[in-house]
Length: 155
Image 1 (cartoon, helix red, strand yellow):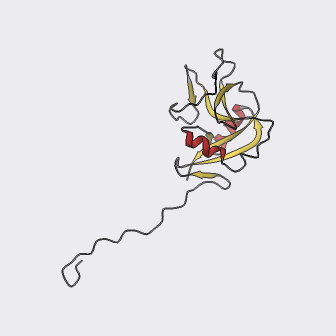
Image 2 (cartoon, rainbow, N blue to C red):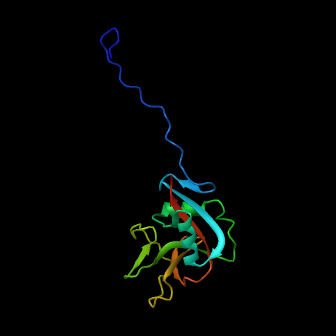
Image 3 (spheres, rainbow, N blue to C red):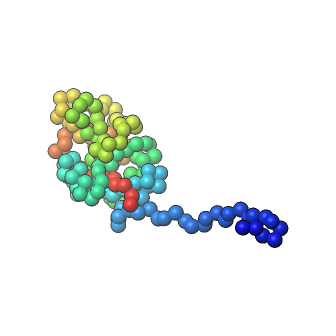
C-alpha cells in the first residue's frame, strides 16, 4: 500500500503485551525459568511430597542454577516454614542406575552439594533435601519428613 508519494510505510510494531504467565492460583511464576512454584509447609516424606506435586501437575522442584536457588528462597511461605525443619525436599534422588536424577527429567547439570555430601553409598539415603538457608544439597533418608517445593510448567 502506497501513500501519495509512492512510499510504503514500515509495518507498525505490535504493541500487544505478551500474555500474562499462566500459573495456578497461589503459585509463583519465575520468568527466567518459565515455570511455576509453590511452597508446601506440611512436612511429608519424599515420596508423599513427589506424589502430591504430581497430582498438581508438577514435580518436586529441580534446582538448575544459583539464581533458581535464590528465587526459591523468596517464594511466599518459604521464610515462614517451621524452624524445626532446616531442610526442604527437592526433586533430586538416587536413580535406579548410578548417580542422581531429577524427577522432572531435567539434566543433572547444576548440583550444589553441602560439604561432605552426598555421604551415603549404601542406598539408605536415596533422596535429596536442600538446606533452607544455603539451599545446598544433602542426601537423606526418604522417609524423613520435611516441607517441600513443587514446580510445574506454566499454562
